[in-house]
Image (tube, rainbow, N blue to C red; front, side):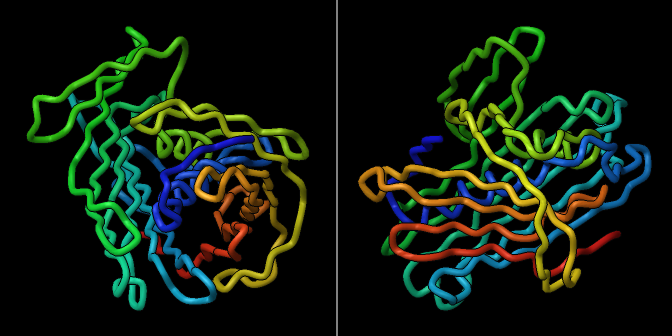
Length: 266
């Protein structure tokens, strides 16, 4: 599989978080844990991303329900990614991503990307981009807040943003194990095709202890390193809760891990 992320090493963190959330959706073919769309509650996962053994980013994943738009129940899924000390000495990041999803079909309605980052190793960016899906016309409208800039992207079949894809398979459906998992998602810029191999494993989690897990693994070529390849490994619990436990990325320059630090239910 070949993915070409942005040129900066640190900007790869964002792609890793998105891939992590998508990949954790692969289950054992059984019904997911679910959230009653009519009852307002929330599930939250908190992660720390490390670079060379030091904390670099904190990522928080929220899955909520009880929202209504046009009288219809919706799910809302959000990810916040912020830089932490000592990384803030070299770069600052405070990005968030939100997806509003139909509760019955899990089809995406709106996907919002709020980007606020700058630093020695990051290009300065500060904008809010809104992607509105029109499944009947097979298109997505992409526009920047406070700007007249607008474009339409057409797709031949059903399309999902990364968080809507995660919600569908985490809350509702599952996919077979011991197989190749291929997903096509629209990230607000382009469609991406992701391919993973899955197998049974065990994982020592800071939160859950030693657990049965599923390991997803993929080889990725990074343009940032002259198309040299790295390895992406993702673990999540093998039970019906499918809790995303850890992401490990083996780069030509070293190892980076996102590890689950806390789970909250409300």
